[in-house]
Image 1 (cartoon, rainbow, N blue to C red):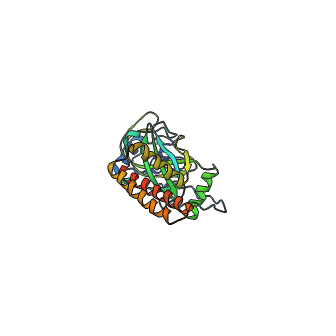
Image 2 (image 1 turned 90 degrees about the vertical axis):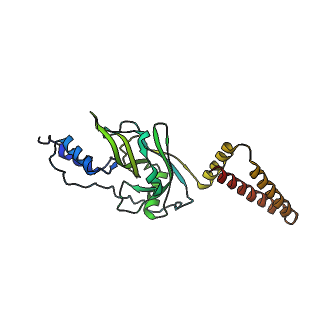
Image 3 (image 1 turned 90 degrees about the horizontal axis):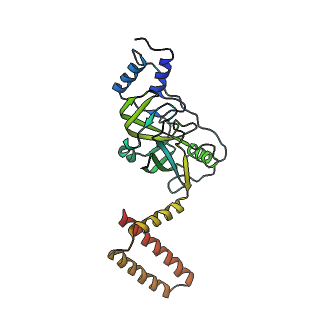
Length: 263
C-alpha cells in the first residue's frame, strides 16, 4: 500500500518530533507500527529540529542549588495539539528521579538547564518542581520565565503501551525521560504555576512537617529539653540579642530534626 499524500511528512514528525511536539523515544517495533499506520514501506530519514536559545543580555543571577524553585504542570490527560492523550496514571518516573534533568526544548545534545527536585501526580496532572543551573543559558531562560516571556513545558518519554485513535495516539503507559522548558508546548495546560525562594520553600516544608507530625514524640520532647538547657546556659553568659539568635538557631535545628523523623 502506497503512503497517502503528506503521510511521509506526518510520519517524520511523529517519529522525530519538531516544534510544538513532545520528544518521544520510540522502540524499533513501535516505529514499525507507525510506518504501517501511515502506509510507509520504510522508515523515512529525518531528525528533530531544536529551538535556539534566546539572548536576553544582562542576567540577574539567582540559579543553582539553593536558588528559587519553579513549579510546573508538565503533563495532563487532556487532548494535546497533536491529537494525543497521555494517561496520568501511566507515568513511570522511577528512572527519571535517578537523573532528574530539565532541558531546553528537548535538546539533549546541550547541557541541562536545571534539575527537578520533585515530580508527582496530582489529579489529572503530572507536576514538577525544579531549579535552574548557574549557567548563562539556564539563567537566560529563567529570566524569560520571570518576565513571563516563557512559561511552558513539554515532556520527553518512552512509550510502553499505546493505541491509535481517530485523532492521534492514546498513550496508556510511558516512562518519563526528561521534561523541557519550551516556547510552544504540545499540551496547552503544561505551564508554570508558581515560583518560590529557597527560604520560603524551607518554611513551607517545616509547616508541612508540623502539620503531619502533630504531637511531638518522646524523642522529640527529649531533644527539645536538651535545646532548652543549652539555651538557658547560653543566655546566662551572653547579651539578649545573642540569646535570641541562639534560640532561633536551636528552633531551626528542632525543625530539621522533625523533618528527618517525618521523612
